[in-house]
Image (cartoon, rainbow, N blue to C red):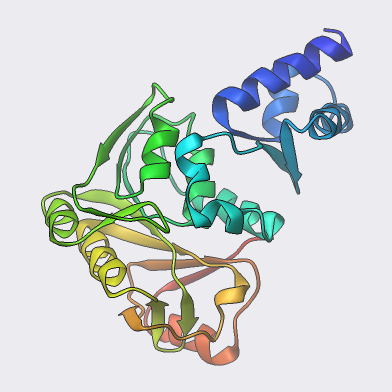
Length: 254
């Protein structure tokens, strides 16, 4: 395979799957990691991909996702979001039923799940749009009223939808995390997230370190033994102790 053929193949792969890591690309298309990095550098120069530590993602072209504020936020702290998303995605096994919340970090997780055969339940229109192009993921979208800023469905219909399902895993975001638990800004989001937690055997919160020490409008939930908190930096001693004392798990993305 010539260098151009490899670069073209990598471009097609990322256009299809939205995201890929270096090791997957090297294994699939041959060449060393440095060879793959050079190909990604060329694609980034052409404005096709955005490089992250350990991989690259397609520059957002999803017309549905573009309408929402979280897309702009997803361009901030891309390395941290990728590291967290990779660790969360590694916990998702083929055949699982997974609830996916809205938000930029959860959307990053969704991008990494495109090659896994899954049943996904979501109230996020951008996540649903992403999976509409993926044949191996069966996607169920809840009812509800659209919260335009984030492109999520909320309200009684949304909550009723989550009340009627069961999932192996729920992947949620949040606006803040303190020793009291995980917080969020909007009462309707909090109500929906509580239903997601109740519907799932386990819940993973994907939270970067900008959320540390922040309280929002409502406490979504205190820590629970069924929870895993995935973040990129060790939180304060008080928060780490509260997670441990509740029997929850703290996982750091490197």
